[in-house]
View 1 (cartoon, rainbow, N blue to C red):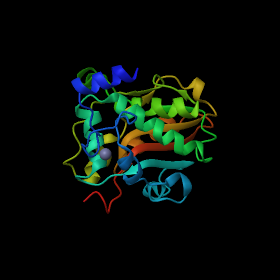
View 2 (view 1 turned 90 degrees about the horizontal axis):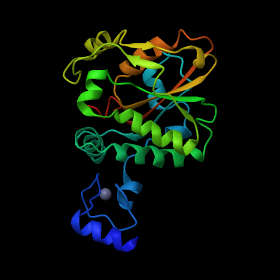
View 3 (view 1 turned 120 degrees about the vertical axis):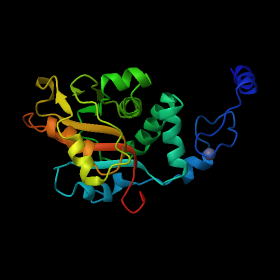
View 4 (view 1 turned 120 degrees about the horizontal axis):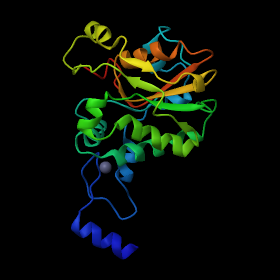
Length: 233
Ligand SMILES: [Zn+2]
């Protein structure tokens, strides 16, 4: 096995997706230095964290977590870019597993019943080939041994790119974009909604709009990175 690994790294030099340095044999995707030094939010240790405050009572959330804090032009952005634009879906799953390991040490998601990634519109899914939030969710579901549900929530509207729009326009843009296809199985369930990056929280709110009609449903959210307002400038 070691021989194969050595051989493979001769053909395909392996690099840390965050800093670009060569990886050692025992490292995968992210070097140990980056693992230790990337800006983690540690929101699972603080139930009054900045992310839950972003939703500020607009959505009654049980919990709101994000693994990393987003920094423009930083290493976290590099990771997200690699996932989304270099087809590194396994990196998203790997990050989900890393976060899952942290979460196993606390009780933040103990009561979650089912994990639902924010779905892509089918046209976008066809174009990209995978849903990055789903792969991150896979890593979390696997590590925490929770059920992953990729069928109940559907994206029914294709939204245009939102990055250049102002905040109030973004809110209008995401209203009514999701539909619950199968609500029966979600009655009285604690649902963990998974997104790749949370900025204004508009996408999460749109998903909540669709899910809140289900009797007895509770919602928590989790993302790879959170672009807190002061960091997102
Ligand atoms: Zn690194």
